[in-house]
Image (tube, rainbow, N blue to C red; front, side):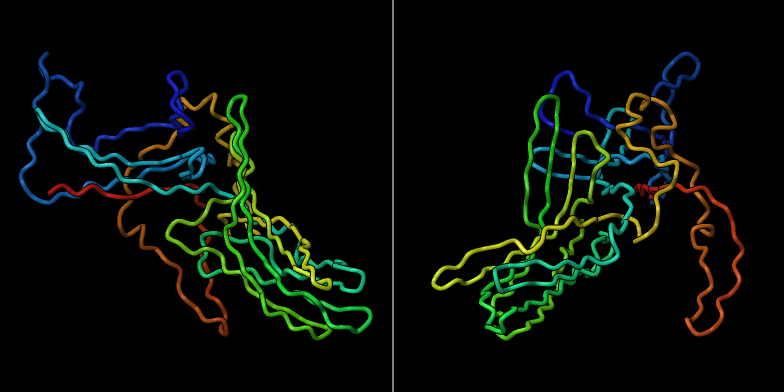
Amino acid sequence: MGWKKSKTDDTRLFAIRNILWGLPATSTVGGSPSVYPILEAGDYVFPFTCQLPMINYPPTLQHHLIATAFNIVVSIVKANDSVSKTVPVYFQPIIETLLLRPTYTEEHKLSQHISAIITVPKLAYNINESAQSISVKVQLYTDNQESIHISHLCVYIKKFFKIKYKTSTKSEDTVVASYDYIKIPTTCPNNLSLKLDLPDSAEPFPVTLDYSPYLTIQYKLVATVKIRHGPINFKKKLFDIPVIFGTLPVGMTAPRQLESYSNIKENIASIHCKPTFLRPQPKEALEESLPAYDSIGKPPAYTIVSRRNSNYSMGSVTVA
């Protein structure tokens, strides 16, 4: 986790190590350094399982003001030589995708004669889902049956960064996605419907973050209109409402034992506050699945097996 060049602050979240094959470098045989085991030429697979604790670490983030990175480093050590490779790991914390309200509906008066009713059905989204969009409906009407003199409607999502480090505070806001509705009919009443597509990339944008004392990330859905008044166009904000971007399915609550990293960083040296390497599970155990059923028939009966909530990072190292 990096802020800036510092000689005194240790910004490392954690570091753990596990030997998949061979002997520890400190081991000795007969009072002399141990001889490295011999590994014949060929292809080898060394599976491993890494369990993360129920701790919300900072998310993977690359920003010019702050950066957080998680990496797996694989090293092969020979008698007088070593080679290593670093593989980045994308990490997102457990963030609830809770609806602040079922549906947002409000009425705004834009001018002396023009009013608008805004409806947004959903204001919470799971960033792990693809091809998502925010639906917005705007109904424009006048009280004197005249034409509606609105030339432009813009809806956009704005991301707000707030970073605190020691005595300094820096803020930044950027537009994540936008939609422009330019050709607005002048008939009255006028019903406008639009969909604002959310960014869809290999690495989703940062989630809503409010548990860190150093970094806050918030999102707002904003809409503005341009109203013609004679030869003059003036801009007016239609609405400005918060939007939640989480990592859990909508309505699902986070585990009760989940803690923020900022709450346990004083005890980060504890074994319970660090990821741990576990004995790899048999392949058969990873292929368990529930029987499929259609929505018409009666679902089959399931045997409930209680298992501990955990986050796992699984992989293998292949040596050629």
